[in-house]
Image 1: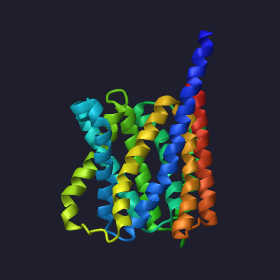
Image 2: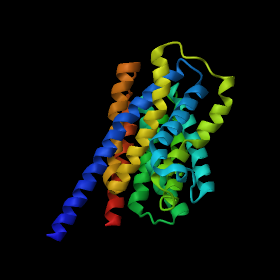
Image 3: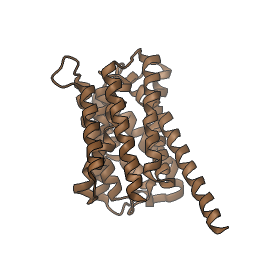
Image 4: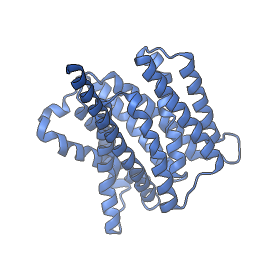
Length: 296
C-alpha cells in the first residue's frame, strides 16, 4: 500500500509538472509576438526595458509578501549578477532579431539551446555525455545551419543573432544549474531580470517614446508580466518532474509560434526552415530521452 501511495503521488507530481510546462509554452509565443509587434512601432531598447522591468516588478510583487527581504539575499551574489547579465544580453539579441525574422524561425533556432547545454555540461558541470548524445547534438546543429544557411542567399542576420541568443541562453541555464541548490527559485527569478531592469531604466530617458494607443500601453505592461509568469511555470515544472520528462513539451511552442506568426504577421516558414526545425526538435527529443535513460 505504501509503494502504491508513493507511486500515485509521483504520478500526480509529474502530471503537475507537465501542466506547468504546457502553460509556459502557451505563454511564450504570445510574449514573443508582443515583442515583435512593439519593435516594429517603438525603439528596440524600450521593448527590452519593458520586458525586464515588468518582469522584475511583477515577481517582487508576487514573492516579497511571503519572503520579505530574504528575496534579495542570494547565497552566491556574484553568480546571480553574472547570470542576470547573461540573460539580459541573450534576451536583447533575441528581441533585436525579431525585427527581421519570423516567430517560427526564431523559436526553431532557440531550440538549439538545450543541445548547447548538453555540450557545455561537460566542461562546466563535469557531466559525462556519451557518443549517442554527442551525435544528436551535432545533428541538431546541422539542422540550425539549414535554417541560417550561411553563405547562401537565404541567410538572415536575424537568424545569426538568434543563434547567439541561444548560445547565451545555454550559458544562463548552466549557471542556473550551478546555483540551483543554493538559492530558492523565487530569488533566482527576481535576480534574472535585475540587470536588465536597472540598466535599461537608467537609459530609458534617452530613447523613450510614449505609446500612442491604449493597446500599446497594455502590451508594454503585459510583456514583462508574461515573461515572469513563464519563467515561474518552467521552474515549477522542473521542480515537479524530471527535465527529461517535461522538457520535450517545450517544443510545442513551435506550434503556437507558427500560428501567431501567420495570423498576426502573415509569416509562414519555408521548406528549409521546416526541415531544420524538424531536425532540431528530433535531436532535442533524443537527447532528452537519452538523459532520462542515463539517469535511470
